Amino acid sequence: MNNENTNWGQSVAGVVIKDNRVLLARHTYGNGKGMLIIPGGYINFGETPQDALKREFMEETNILVEPKEVIGIRFNMHDWYIIFAAEYVSGKAISDNNENSEVLWIDVDQVLTRDDVPELTKKLIGSAVSKFCGLQPTNYKGNQKHAPYSLYAVPDSYLLGEV
Image (cartoon, rainbow, N blue to C red; front, side, top):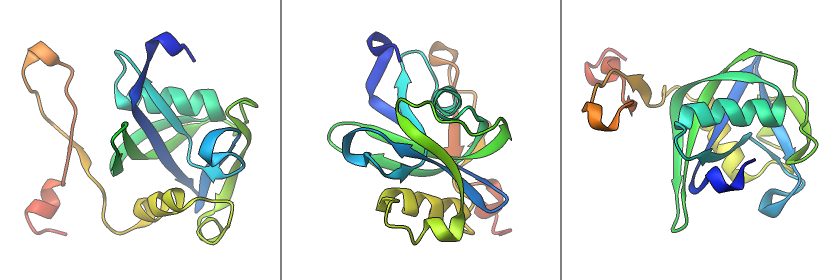
């Protein structure tokens, strides 16, 4: 990680579920030390949250993902944290042996009852598997001065009462 380029006030994480198993990493430092958490990390300056998520997953787990819906946002007085549901694209789960000591695919139902999975991770996994589809990427051009833009909003199908 290039600390000079790190935006310490913005971070991302992702919930990836494949075959009813969720990808988790056993954290090696900080408040989450020893716990199984969803992968993620800080955004670099000049990087979109979606690109940061792809980079963090590749660095920490060797898994290529594609960000989909926004399923959570956590704010505090220090920073903000956006959580995506993400689709598995390719790769074999391998620990980076730095920020995590192991990377595991674990059955979703088992994860929600484990003591080594923090409450936030459980809530976000619950959000990813819920019937609500999350905030979806939505076409939005914005003004070109601050491009590129991305907007995540309630899907039109919800607004039109189709769901």
